[in-house]
Amino acid sequence: MNENNNRAQFTTRLGVIATTVGSAVGLGNIWRFPYEAGTHGGGAFLFTYLCFIFLFGIPILCAEFMIGRQTRSNIFGAFRKLRSSGQWHWVGYIGIGASLMILSFYSVVAGWTLEYLYQSITGALNFSSAEEFHKQFSTFSTGNWRPLMWTIIFLLLNFVIVIRGVQKGIERMSNIMMPCLFIILIIFCINSLMMPGAVDGLKFLFTPDFSKINSSVMIGAMGQAFFSLSLGLGTMLTYGSYFSNRTRIVRSATTTALLDTSVAILAGVIIFPAVFTFGVSPAQGPTLVFEILPNIFSQLPGSIFWSSLFFFLLFIASLSSTISMSEVSIAFFSEEKKMSRKKATWLNTGIALVFGSICALSFGSLSGMTIFGHTIFSLFDYVSSNILLPAGGMFIAFFAGWLLDRNIIKSQLTNDGDVKVHVMKIIIFSLKYIAPIGILLVFLSLINLI
Ligand code: PHE
Image 1 (cartoon, helix red, strand yellow):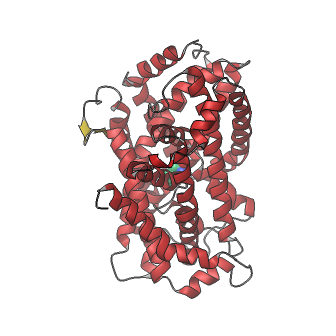
Image 2 (cartoon, rainbow, N blue to C red):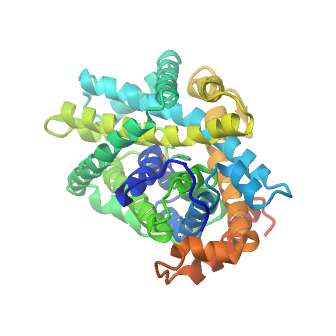
Image 3 (cartoon, rainbow, N blue to C red):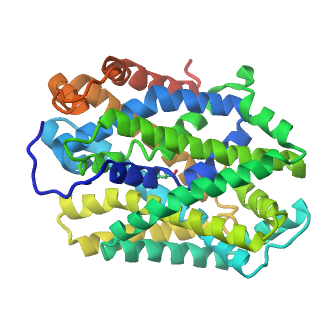
């Protein structure tokens, strides 16, 4: 395998999983998955999403892990070490663009989480009808100042954590918080399953109507798979660079993907029964979860406790995700552009503050500012998740499948022959053919070339 240099390494297997899951699990699972599934027909979306997780997600996750561990560097350094010629550094630029765009709009939603945490604690989320919850959220989100304030607060928190180098602390915190989140989601699931709309909700989520699978469902599901796994921008590659030589790559990738996917499905099982019980539309977009969840909580005994605990855990889950995406551009500015880490972190935060503010105002005074019919918020969301991440993933898969020395792949996947990997051929086949061609076909279907 590669030389073992002084780079810090994860010491335990649990450390590896906790950190990769900490990055993967976040608003993508609890906020984005239900709203995407809701706007794309439920079951048809879930089915397509699961196919993409298995066909592209797990193999590309393995590819990022092995390229990272082989080169022990960030995405730019990795391509430079493995292939000094060619234009491969462009994959790194795609990753940086994606990470900054995601950080910008993600912080807005993390800011909504903070507002709802605040409202939960003060007992303000106490309404009795779906209309009132709808009005509450829309008054808040169109009100400019509060969403802007929370976005800035969230980005500054992210900044302080990254600049003080206390990510490890947050990661340790999220090691405890993530299992808590999982448990509370299961409790909410049970609650939702007892609602009158449970059967309709579950039908909506789990019965795929295959006739609904069109290019918009496919591009949405593909983007969601990449977004949710933090894939295609170099985040997981960087984590791979900290793996010890004993870490089992295929097993880590599979465990991460399965845990991440279960959280998304749990979120769906919580949301859709409630959507049908409250008689609201599942296709209302990014606001869905923030109107449904508080409504669910308000009906539980001890609602202030549940609601505060949930939004707090969601906030920590968001923070462990933004820390991981910030690392992509900070590593670029500091390791490649030779800035001090402090300056690099400032720059990362500065850019996100500018674009994050515009995204925050996209629901209020900038709602009329649209490009191709998208507000800036939804444009950032769409372009980064649905285009940039899969494009990055396509190149990473192509690189691993066609250009990476086969012996490197074998030694990385088997830890120099120490572990047997039965699915090795399948992974290589996917990286060579299924993932790059599949992603390309989904892109082509979008521009109606097929
Ligand atoms: N996967 C994270 C989530 O689901 C979002 C993310 C995307 C994190 C890309 C890092 C990089 O919330």
